[in-house]
Amino acid sequence: MRFALFILALVAAGPATAGSFRPPAGCETFMTVQSRGCRVSNHYQCSADQKGDQWRADFDQEGMFFLSRIDREAQWVESFDLNPTVRQTLDPNPADAASFTDLLAGRDDFDFRLSKETGEKSHVTGHDALTGKSMTMDGVTLLQTAFDFTEVDAEGNELRRARGNEFVHPEWRLFFAGPSEWHDGNDWLPVNGSPVQFVFPGEPGFESTQPIFECGALMSRAPLHPPVQEASYAR
Image 1: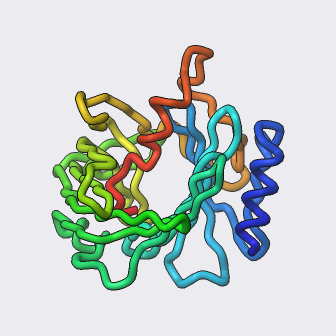
Image 2 (image 1 turned 90 degrees about the vertical axis):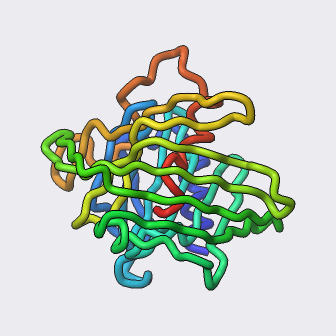
C-alpha cells in the first residue's frame, strides 16, 4: 500500500516535483544518476526490505514513468510501469536465477519467468558477461558487460530482444545502461542510456527528478521508454 500511495503521489505531481524526490516512509535515497536519453534515476533502500534490496525510480521530462526493485543478486524482483500503473513480479523458482555474483566471476546466464498483475506472463533467457574493460564516468569506475536477452510471451511470441553493453559497479551491485540495440521485430534500433553524472547526498542535484542530458524538444517518449529496462533483466 505504501508504494501504491507513493506512486500515485509522484505521478499526480508530475514534472512539478523536479528536484524534490522523496522516497516512501522508512526509505532513504543514496544516489541520483543523470543519464543520456533524458532520464534521471533516484536509487534508494528501505529498512523493511530484505537486506541488499534496492529500488530505482526513473523520471523523464513528464515525470516518473518506471519503478523497480532488485535484490542483492540484482534479480528483477518487481517493477511498476506507470501511466497506467502495472506491476510485474519475478516468478518463484526460476530455472536459472540471475546472479550478480556469477557475473563478477566472468559470466552469468539466466532463465526465468515474469508475471504481470493483468495476468500476462513472459519467459526471459539470456546472459551477461564481463568484457574485461572498465570505464570511468564522473569519477566513478564501472566494469563493462556484454549482454543479450530475449523475452517471449506464454505462446512463444517475441516481446523484447536486446543486445549490447552495460556497466556494473561491483560494490554497489548495480547495473547501469550502456550502448545497446533493441529489435523492433524488423530492425535493430540503437539506444544509449549511459550514466553521465552521479550525485550523492549533500551535492547539488541530489534527489532531482528533472533529467538534464539529451532532453531536446525533438526527443519523443516512443523510442526511449521501451528500452528503459535496457538492461538484461538481471537487475
